Length: 232
Image (cartoon, rainbow, N blue to C red; front, side):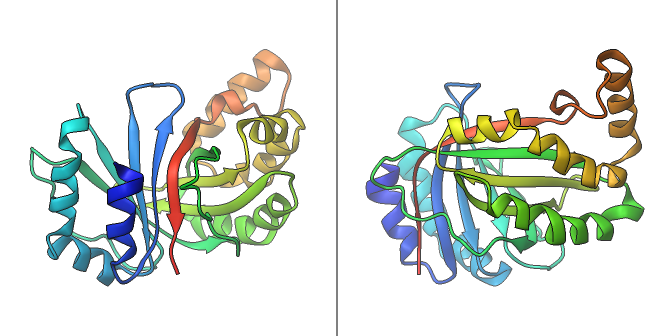
């Protein structure tokens, strides 16, 4: 239904750059609808047009519970999204740091892996995180086998919350990246920007395991892309 009905309608909306359905690999029943927009204006126009409610209504026969992530590619302030009780919660993010590639067309069913690393950043270190991520993290990840896309999003509701998002050709490529030690190396480059709670947890991990950092202290989630398509 998503591939045959939802994606074609979103393709008609001005400003919609990507639409996709992702599946939480740790929870069989959970899926997330992801749309990427080139501006806040286009995203809000989509909601005002009535198409969002129409498409949501068409999905309800399949849903027990759901949520929608909205990744806004902009630098604007927090929008006023007020979900009603009978609708999925819409969560907005913004980013101005991304690699040049796009998500591509996965409507044919070839599975990709979406890897999301949650970071809590010290308020005084946000600009430093963004600079290091742009100068050092993105260029390295672009050369890693299987890594198709990289971007950093900033949560607009959770204070100082960031998500490092990478798209992989396969779960195996993502796992190989972690096992290679490069993931821990890149974390070390930005760990000085983390909030105190993360540094404390990593300090405990260091005492227990003798490591400077372990991915066990930083939340990492994997999602499989069920279907999706880039537009334009």
